[in-house]
Each structure stands twice: as structure tokens, then as C-alpha cells.
Amino acid sequence: MEIQQLRMFLKVAEQGSFTGAARECGVSQPAISQQIARLEGSLGRPLFERQGRQVALTEAGEILRRRAMQIVSLTEDTARLLRDDGETGRVSVSAIPTVAPYLMPTLLGSFHERHPRAAVEVNEEVTEAILRRCGVGEVDVGVLAMPASRAYLKFEPLFEEELLLATAADHPLADRERVELDDLRDHPFVLLDEAHCLSEDIRGFCRRRLFQPVATGRAAQLVTVQELVAQGFGISLIPAMAARPDPSGRLLYRSLDGERPTRTIAACWNPDRYESRLMLSFLDTLRQPRAD
Image (tube, rainbow, N blue to C red; front, side):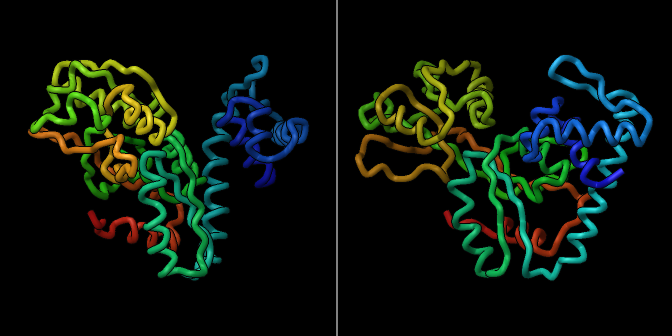
């Protein structure tokens, strides 16, 4: 049994297919199949049940999966401990798309001033991918919006952020002296697609006011939402960190009166993994007060 075989085994178990695991590992499908066959041969037990193009763990495979995660984690953490000088190395961070482009550049600049010889790998992913990758140790720190939970992850709220009403400059709500959440019920919304937690946050705020927002379109990126709003296709609620001034004057932002919708941004990580000094320093950078 070799460490690389266990890594490949875990990737097949995670992906549910040899093809997907090969793509993730950067090897050919026959190569990964061969390694799994050798592992099964050395153990004398089948680890996967073949179900067409998909595979599922056998009872023996599930037992090995739990142990393999511990073995691979201990091996990787030991190597990181021996290399950890607090100044060199790499920190892997994943942030949701409605945070990454707005928070990360400034934060990375601050971290680089303190650790000029360190590297930071930034990934932009949806919440579910961040939780999964933090859990298996592929990512050191996740930055996401609450609520989110995993039994084996630690979550630390960082700050609360207001969601601002975004309208086109000529929208009927733009000239209103006061606009409350109830006033939005008769207006169509432009939202991000279902993979993004921000859309569920917006629907949750509206449901608390006993109405369901009618979506006129769904986008994969926040900049697309902002452009569609500027063109008059609907309104939206935009995180304050993403509310950049529009030089063309087509897009306006404002705080709602009365109850103001907010979201909580948090960090998450796996406390059972080795916490390098660089990772802990990155968490400290995340905790620094933000300039409004």
C-alpha cells in the first residue's frame, strides 16, 4: 500500500468515477484504474462496486476510506510541520465568488507585506465546494457567508456586511425618499444562479416579509447582475463590498430604510489538520478590522 495509491483511491471515492478522479489527479484513466487494481490485489478485497461509469464503495472500501484519510492527512501534516518556518511556504484559500474579487486583493497585499516570501493560492468556489475541500485538507482556509456548517469544520464570523438596493438610475424606486424591504415586493429581481448562497439570502429576507421575489434572470457572476440591473431588467440586493460607483451613472445603490438586510462573512478551516504558522497568520489578517 503506497501513499499515492491511497490518494488516488480517495479521489475515486470522492468523484464516484475513475474518469473524474483521473482528471482531478492529472493522470490517465487507465493509470488510475491500474493503481486501484494493485491496491485491491494487495488487500485481497474489492474496494469499489462498478455501476456502469460510476462506482460505489464496498464495505471494505468504506473502512479503507476512513483510514486512508487519516494516513494521508498525517503524512501531509508531518511534511508541513517539518517545513514550517513561518515565513516560506504556501497557504491555500477558497472564497465564494461574491467575496473573492472584492476582499482578497487588499487582504493579500496586507499579508504579503508581512510575509513577502510566502505564496497564497486563491480559489473562487461556491460554498459547498469550499466546505468539501476544507474538510479533506485541499484548502487551508475558506471564506464564505453564513449560514454554513460541517461537523468537522470550525467557523469564525469575521464581519457583518450590508446588502444595498441596486436599481437603474431611471427606476421608479430611484427617486423615492424612503425605500423599505416591503416596497420591493412588486418589482422583479435579477439574481445569481442557484449555486450562489447570496440568492438564497435574498429570498430569505423576502420570505420574512411574506413575499417571494420574482426573478427575471439568473447570472453566474455579480458583475452580470449589476449590468442587467443598470439596463433596467430588474432590481437586486448587492453586497456593500461589491457596490462600486458606476461612472456612467446608470446604476444606483442605496441602503434600505427600516430593516436593512445583511450577511455575515466567516472563515472556516479543519482544526484536525495541521495549522501552519502561515495559515494562522493569514487568519489573523482576515480578522483585522476592515475600512468602510
